[in-house]
Image 1 (cartoon, rainbow, N blue to C red):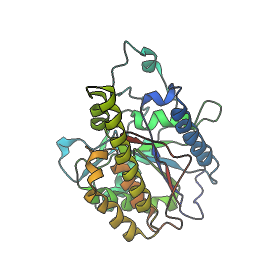
Image 2 (cartoon, rainbow, N blue to C red):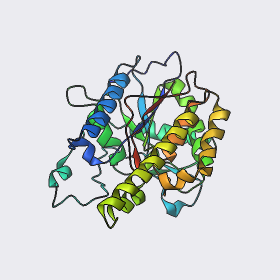
Image 3 (cartoon, rainbow, N blue to C red):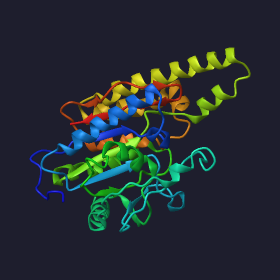
Image 4 (spheres, rainbow, N blue to C red):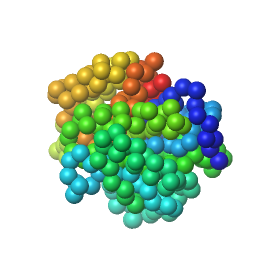
Length: 301
């Protein structure tokens, strides 16, 4: 079981590019790189000593329910969490085996209740919820922590805020930053670029020539935003990093790279939790940027 020993310094913060369930079976060279990058991060996490008390996850597939209104987050306090086969695509005909995937893991409702209380103490409106583990967590974690080196640290899931107030997501990260001194490891899971709209434009092109032209345009947009994002997360000072990240909204590539923001907001939470990181945000692994997608991984330490 995880050690309850308090770490001598704040634990690092990770942002991972989680991809979809195809991450687990796609045989493409690019996907192999994404897999290897995540496995290396998993090995790094399991090498942390003393063992973290829990992993605090923020996922692009766990926004607080719109019904709560703005400014509310949810903490999953369910005991015996199941994994959700919450895929964008319907794989029942093409790859029905994906609905048989499992991922054994530990949860910790008592720690989740502690997190809920902590957030309330930080002025965050927090509601307790009961739900499963979404694919933004279990798909990458299934790769990062395979059966031969399973994750023996419980997972506590916290939502991001619903909506487009990006600064609030950074404040959420700041609210959990002190928990890094108490043995909580923050892992935020999203995508540096996530645009199904752009991918749809490529697929809808009327000819091979126009498809290639659109693909190159989208790839250039994705790479440009990825480059700006890397520069922003690299800022060491919390205030400077926050300003640089929020300024990304002014870029023409921002809405092209994130037509909706739920895959971007976990990165903002991670950046807020990092506070004044000694190294800033350091990219991990080999770069993988595709038209409409970036699989950037970052460590703040």
